[in-house]
Structures are given as structure tokens and as C-alpha cells.
View (cartoon, rainbow, N blue to C red):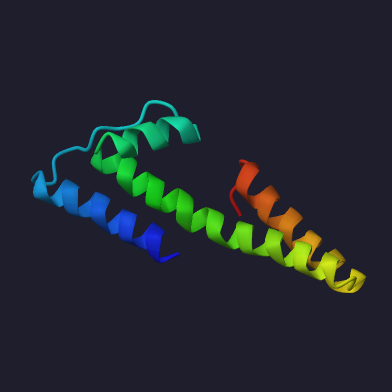
Length: 98
């Protein structure tokens, strides 16, 4: 999580160092374009990369929790964790706004 926050801060700092001009936008919204833009030093790409890491962190933690509870054979918590995981994925991939 600190990595995502750090990358976001670096991206915003580069943007500020450039005089708060309009940052180069990323044409495609897919992850590979964001990665390429971030590694090329684009301020917006670095900030977006940080945001992707910040969004992926809780999803990754819930997935690991489901695996952990599965190894422990605690089916109740596996079911609860998978339900939370499904809700996170639905919120991420649905294009509805609450």
C-alpha cells in the first residue's frame, strides 16, 4: 500500500515540477498502457500506476484470505471471504455508480 501511495505522490510531484500543465493523458484505459506510460516517466502514468496498486491491494488481500481459510478448512470463513471477494470484483468491473 505504501508503494501505491509513493507512486501516486511521485506522479503528482512530477506533474507539479512541470508547472501543473495538463499532464499527458493515457489514451487506453487498459493496464498495459498504464504500465508502459508509467515506466516511460509520464506523470499521469506514474500516478495511475499508484492508483492501480492502491485498488489492487485489498482485492489481493481478500483473495489470499480465502486461500488461507481454505487451507485451514474453515468453510464458513471461506464462504464469507469469497462473498466479499465477489462484491469487490463486481464493484470494480461494473460500470454503475452507487
